[in-house]
Image 1 (cartoon, rainbow, N blue to C red):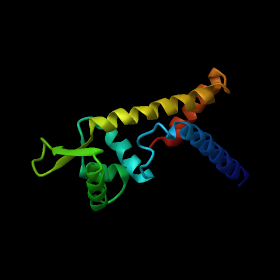
Image 2 (image 1 turned 120 degrees about the horizontal axis):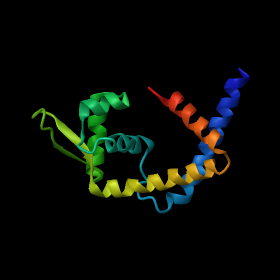
Image 3 (image 1 turned 90 degrees about the vertical axis):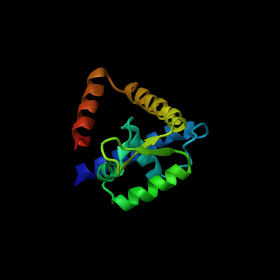
Image 4 (image 1 turned 90 degrees about the horizontal axis):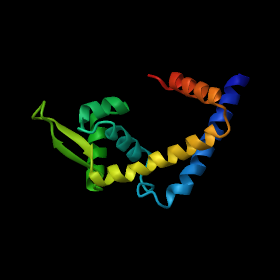
Length: 141
């Protein structure tokens, strides 16, 4: 039980560490006003430059198709995503990020680069490799 509690504390510390980095950039982040769910949808959609079907988005996020449809409608209304025709299935639509959002999401890479740099400054190369391997293993599907 002690190992689990120690890991929980470490994860809380990591979350605080990341939150501090995000706060530094929050003033310049045009997407800071989004809810966690909205941002999560954008992150998944970003993985599909040609767009993703509603069905596939629902499966990826492990939510219902009606939930995805409602969120996509909200994101379209905010000008964050657009719907395009699906060339494989005339009945389906694909969802993709607008050009504006693609540019705005590039700030995220800057934040994670800063977080990575801060972490790496406290570890030697072997520890960095070990951390990367452990994260890959723990976060794999």
